[in-house]
Image (tube, rainbow, N blue to C red; front, side):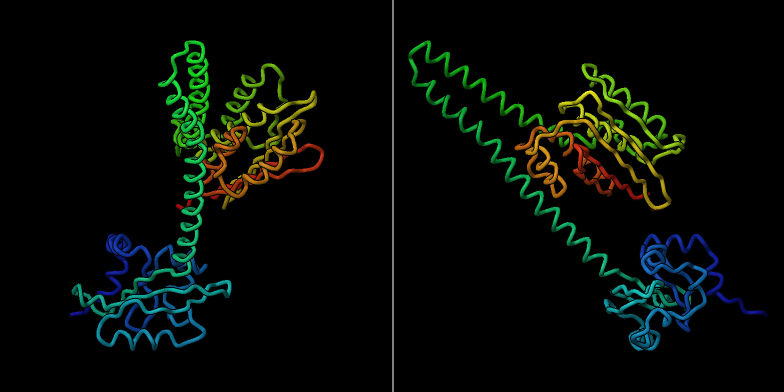
Length: 358
């Protein structure tokens, strides 16, 4: 009777690999000689290797500073180990620090000769933590400044109400009521800005729906035409391939509309224009908006410089509400938006949106 290599049966079984990937998103499967049998996509992307380059080779090839194979063998003496840190080489000669836990698959299944390694990218975790810490700091500042901005009119209203309760003169009462209404309107306006900002990336069209560039251009043209009826804006897209499909097109359209509305609100000269240029690459979509002929006061230009670094001043800078909304949508798309103040009264908005990883 010819014996069957159960290891090869296991590795050729795509369903089992899918199940393992569901349990360990970042995993490596090795044979008993510590050669690659299977490796997760996350690790391939982090190290820059392809499956064909690694399958059948020793895992020791990924470490030039130590004998990784020997160290793994020693740690697996008892059958398993947890959270050992190893520096792994990338294809571009860089390094990635991993925390690795491993065990022989035979401990949990009737399968011998297979080593399972669960790997955690420590560098990626640290970067995620730093980004989260930065976002938390920005959110704390946003909440603090928003509360401060809301308390001003609210405190004034409370003071006016106290005065009204002690007032017997009708004329003075009318004055107090007028003041209460004025500050109530200011408070309502600030709350409206907060609601607009909160809902900026949650509109029905701002979803994951894909749209052609042609559709986005036409829809943006409608927005600019309706909003600039008193002073038309010359609008043009110089991208030739307008049949290209943009992932998350609804969100991109909402983002561009907010930027367009911001420029519509500015003072214009006779010769004004919005020029849109879109480049769709394999890794990202890049959008350039060149705005010319819009009069921006120096104070507003300075605020535009500040918006590149956060969104905390949304209530103090109501004229930038649409820019802040665009920035919030961009954060959801995991991209970057930069407002660049060019000479000759030109503003360039540079947008980079990474492509989804499939």
